[in-house]
Length: 345
Image 1: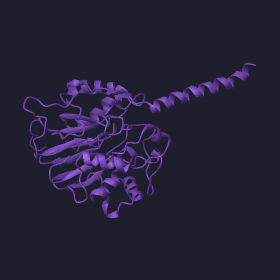
Image 2 (image 1 turned 180 degrees about the vertical axis):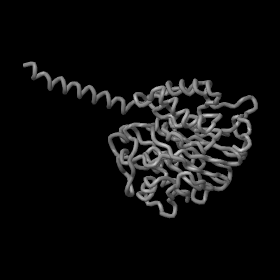
Image 3 (image 1 turned 90 degrees about the horizontal axis):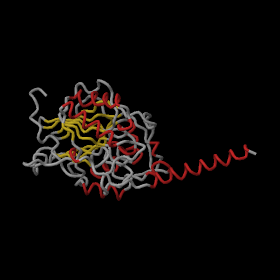
Image 4 (image 1 turned 90 degrees about the vertical axis):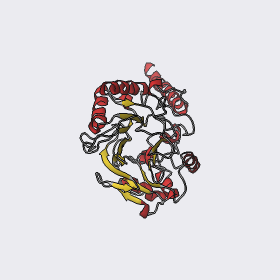
């Protein structure tokens, strides 16, 4: 008779696991305040706040969407505003949310066609980076720049071929006074790493259909200042030796789940290699939460935000690198308080 109970035990276990997963999928995480000492703040002279119309202003719009604007030309990474929820992303299909894109673009002051936005650069082709980019390009007339996989996302959305460009690694490109160079990177090792999109991808589609393609570290130079955007917590050893940067906007999603050796190698391979003096963590926020709500860390078990912050705090102190969490949606002068770059840098 005992063997009759085995299916009942299995059924009970399945029910419990299903309930637990369902609860996690529907869970709205509690509001978590970022570490006070790492918050972006103004000093007594307001040195960390940009003066109106001065230099390059950088806005962090969540995940690794960043808007760089010098008042004449703007460039955007990713342009991800839709942010479908957990249940839809993991079990259903995803597609651009046109209303969310409209709200996000308005909040970030990204204008209509003919605006100063000249290029949208997805750092790789997962849905939380590339999915909305063709629509943003379509609305503004901007160029969609990235990998062959990104190009196929653009084609699937109906973006004209004249607005699609496949990037050449290591080749500087000029957009107004911005010089942009894409260097090879790679996604943090996960079940989603790798793969290419080999034909036009027309949404709605499964989130898993958005394969990584080529990942990029985006190097930007402007007026003697330099920055590097590494939108995922992965890297290619030695790839950034020719990309010195004063500031690194450093993807840390799921970094807290890696061991100390990996985190140290990541810091060395990106931050130390480029000689950065400031690190601003990005891609730490829960991309299943609508972007008009306060940013929250990626929930466990997918990440351990506190472990990432502890590592960055310790590494920054040891290395003499300033570490600051970014403002959300507000303009920042990311070089404020840093000494002028050394000659030849």
